[in-house]
Image (tube, rainbow, N blue to C red; front, side, top):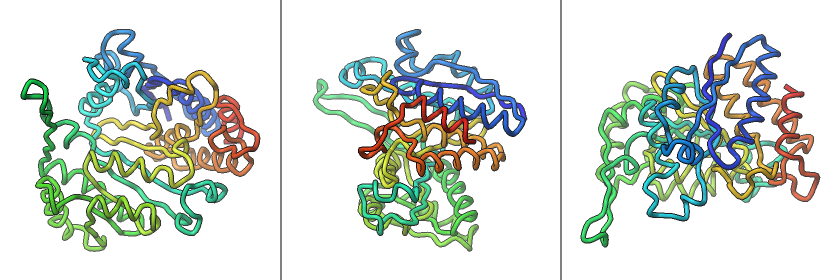
Length: 351
């Protein structure tokens, strides 16, 4: 298969972890007889510095014409520490999601047998955890009208959802649940928010189309609590943009490191694959960043093309590395810590 992949390294450790994912992907392509054409493009702070825009038109052209997008991370302290900055890296991410129609963020959370004791949660609480969040990405408070009034003393951010936006995300949730344990949880705040009541009534109306799926409805605060008490009680969870942003970061530490969790943002035409961690600017250039989440994101990309064996080869290599202790400092736990490039080399050699 010939694959045309847009490559958005972004900021901070993004270029370092992306380099390793490319290295491992190329090894998989060679092993299975595929041809990958990588097309680099600017985004985030790097794009602002170069052209003054966090998601340039040239980058959008490359992305929309690609078979998929492999993405690193965005963000830089000079923008994080300046609330008045007129242009911010994160604006590029929101613009990209909207322009590419990336409406469903798929974030799995699972455990690795060799790392069960490195989680901040007790082994008996997390063993067997294998859940997936579907977070709506292009609506809600992040995209609603926002601004200041009363001479800047009052700020507002409007949260708006349409029934159609809820239906298309919920449909993916029901379909995913059918391929797993047929359990779906709709996460909302329907006791307070009108948008959440729309979410709940829309999902309730769809239940009849998926009679085999057991659907539960839980308030977001209850889910936040249960994620650290009994995470293995969940399977597929669907939720709106803001709630999903917070809950998926909470769930990510169950595995023992944010540097291990991949994600996908699905659209009608093209999909994007990225690690869930941020740009970690303090580690930039130090060769200490964990590339495994980016490698596993590339594995999700292969699987999205129906190349399941290729994805499995990448996952198996990561599991072997963890068992062999070929890990970066975040997982070394006092033992030998390998560099970002060394881990990438080892994974590429062991696919």
